[in-house]
Length: 171
Image (cartoon, rainbow, N blue to C red; front, side):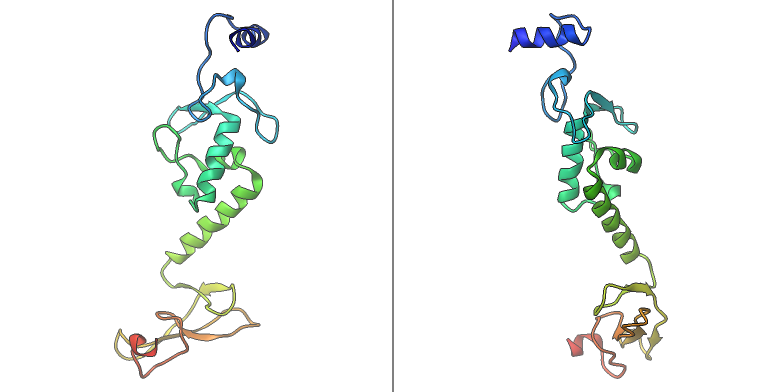
């Protein structure tokens, strides 16, 4: 392998006796790193923290984090755990994985937005006007914004409206 490494270093115009930078993901000299699916090779520097990794290793790292259910604001550097910029994830992760992560990020943001509710019957969501019964513990009745659904539900417990009962009694 040492002779192979020296030949590769010469091919890349490097000193054949001097090792090149090691990739923290695949743990190999960057000249030995595998290309990513688009054929890109070499080391990339993450803009936010300055850590470097081979393109194939970064792609695998980002895809693995996406497979674990991470949102774009939770994808981290492999070395220091700094948040990676969305533009970097978009350019390096596989397109299908990035699209899934982008959708998951949007859904999580909407779920945290006051007044936004997902319909329990269809995949629609929206800002719903609630008809609140007297007392905070009673039903918050709303109607799905999807014209084909129009399902009425309590936004607190997601069951059918129950204006005269508390949510915990209808479950």
